[in-house]
Length: 138
Image (cartoon, rainbow, N blue to C red; front, side, top):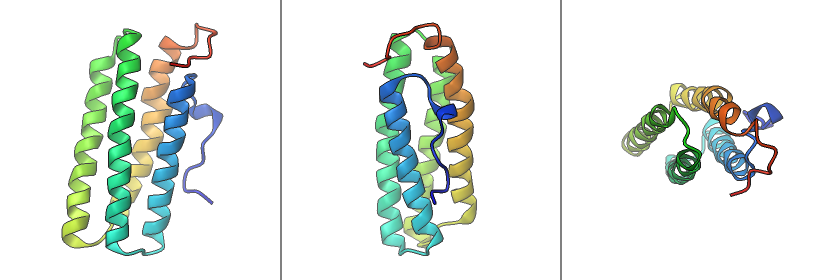
C-alpha cells in the first residue's frame, strides 16, 4: 500500500494541477517504498533526482497558473516552493555523499507533501477555483 494515498480532499479543483499532484505523490511513494526496502543508494539517488526534477517542473506550472489568476499570496507560495527545492537538492547531495537515506528525510517529505497540499494548496484552491464552475483545464 502506498505511504500516502490520494484523496479527494487533496484536490485543488484544477484538473491539470490535480494530475500533477497525483504524479508527484506516485513518485514520492515509489521513492519511499524503495527506501523502506533498502534499495541501493544509486537507485534511490536516481529516484530522488526524478522527484526533484518533476517537483521543479510542477512548481513552475503551478506558479504560472497562480500568477495568471492573480493569486494574492503568490510570493509566499513561491517561497515555500523554493524551500522544498533547496531541501531536495541538499538531500540528493547527502545521499550521493553518504550513500544512505535517513528516516528523518523520508518523514520530512511525507509531512511536506501533506501539509503543503492539504493546507497551502487548499488556500489557493478556495480563493481561486471554488467560485468558478469551469473544469479548470489550462
